[in-house]
Length: 590
Image (tube, rainbow, N blue to C red; front, side, top):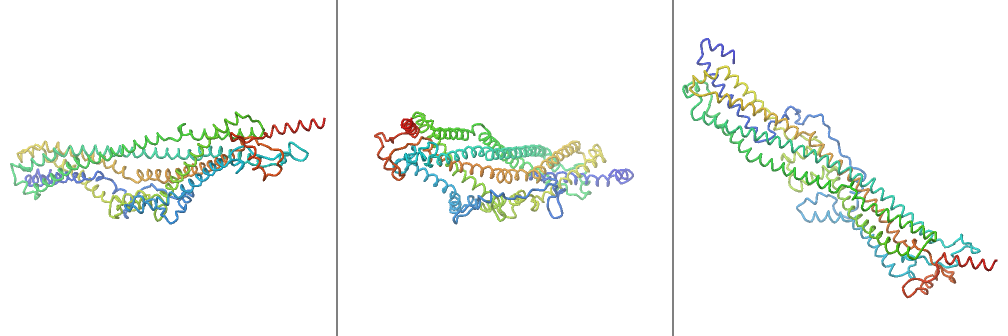
């Protein structure tokens, strides 16, 4: 243009000015193409520079594949007796499908709860039947005949009655199991749940960072929108008076339809204003909702932090109560007893332990539900994974249209960015942005080449404001270019897929599944061993012996004969009886 302007000074000045003025009008219209980018916040995305010939996003990021763990496979394969294991059925509009999955889900919890409930009822029935009917299962001290209390020759250390010993050994073994699995509940169960919480907190923080980037894009779009009004006013004014009112023939000689280009620019500017006033406001509302959701999630994770000492309110009392009951068994085994101490064991510590065990097997049922549902969430679709569950949920909700950008985007990000890139059309917006920026530069150079004062003298119109307007347009195009960078970072696979992988693959389907399975298994062992200890609670009390009954089958009659009016069984304790027989032998053998 500078070369042409120099030649024009030699002779064809008017024709050259007409040509340059036409270029001014053309580039002014091209400069307004930035408005075409406004309806899409990602319009200026640099995706075209990251596209391959096959339409895939070329990136160095490689998303990991999901491999279900053995724990997930085991719980997902729990028998459902003909009911569906697909958790996506809960998203169905068909109520029958939801009920079908729910019925299959509660199978494990129902079996566990029914088993322990039956066991609890049996203990209550045995206690009501009394010792004369069910023996030590009634929960009172062992009743044993004198003939089986001592060995040959009245050897005090060679007792032939082994049931109390076996029961006490079983009781102590169960107590050790309760303590061990209470510790494993914390070290292998709650610790992995705590790790899952930390992973979710990091993913939540990443989402918050994305919303911050979204807020920056919204602010920049609003800045561009604010600049639309003066540009539009300038075009409207020029449309009324004409670009060159002093010499209209100059415009005709250029061969360009200035009025058409101006109207098109005004239309784009109006479209931009509408977008900023409506769509950007909606974008801010969505970002506020996301921020509120992330804040609620952070508050919830902090509130139910398993590392908090309050989370030990179950484990520590369970270990303490178990150790106290085991100590009571050892004291009874060593014949160190006292009626008041026995009363404390029976009416204080034993009921507390029973309440703790009932709470344990209730939690077993609940964690059975949660663990199974968690495994189902990680085992959906044709290729068992959380990705398949998400696609099934979209299908249930009717969002599985392959031409939908939403469906394509979810498929792209959940599938590790191996599907076709869903934002190919953004390359067109990038081309328009580059064209607008280049056209603005050419326009400004053209004005500088002609000269503002010369244009004003030829056309009888003021062009200084147009030059200032071009500077503002160039500035806003730079802002829009910055928005392009932010938008690209926002929708890139490196930004979104790691959040998805950490949330679902790692936290939900690896750490959560492993932690919940350990919690479930630990509570199950604690419940079984605890119920066994309650069943064998007679081991905590000293045995009662009777003279004159040598047959174990006659013990029921003996116990019935010595029941006192207050319901307690009479007779002598083993320790007292041994002392009496020992003194008798001493007197007969001085």
